[in-house]
Image (cartoon, rainbow, N blue to C red; front, side):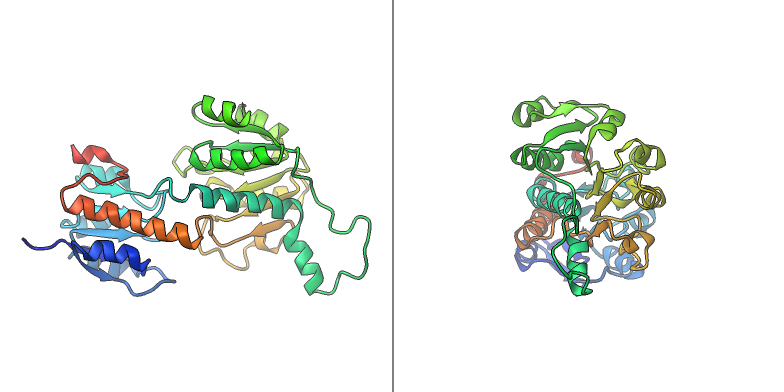
Length: 326
């Protein structure tokens, strides 16, 4: 029996490639840093039975129709807004993702941005580098306290709940807004459910952790920022298009909010001349929420396990549209 043909759209952890190679023949786009060109991706998946792809790869109806042989796309990410899942389901194509394995690492980065933004770490480092630290001063680089402050979590899924557990250790009051209440989170962390507006009005820190969907696209705009405290810090480690970046810029430059910590942007990679990056009260990092060696390796191996299972007649561990398996 012929072995399944697999295309991997980026150089990934060797352990993941070995999982695939045991049961499939594979071709890999030999770049760790840059996405495969669109034309190359279409050409390669057209000759494959399955593909392991990244969030930088657009998997839409055009690509699926150009590659009718490819019956599974294993996304190496928890989010799958890069994939037209309804189009895939309509065509009987399986989509998988990698939830769970990046929860704690992304929660670490989220809390790191809370701390860095509150205590102005980027600004403070620049002050040293630029020779502006001349003496000890009573109000030089003063920031906001995190311990005992109020944290509002918008989207209390796996990652949001993990952030809440960290906040509990800092003695924070925890508010959360979610599609459904979480009695478990309320018991474990003492979290309080709040409407979005009430959460924004009361929180010292607002952490956004919702998935990108048609309902959440542009969820944070001028109205939402106007409800926040002038001392509030806004943290986005979810997806960039959830936020109206122009509204965020206006809120930061007019004093409607105090600071922001960003891991994600409307367009990625973000333009280094983006107005938000010019602001001293913005701490920005390049979409590194899941970027620990252990987590990125596990993401790759889970994607590989999903892919191989689907191609060899087994149920994948984490299908996005399991109805195609019925």
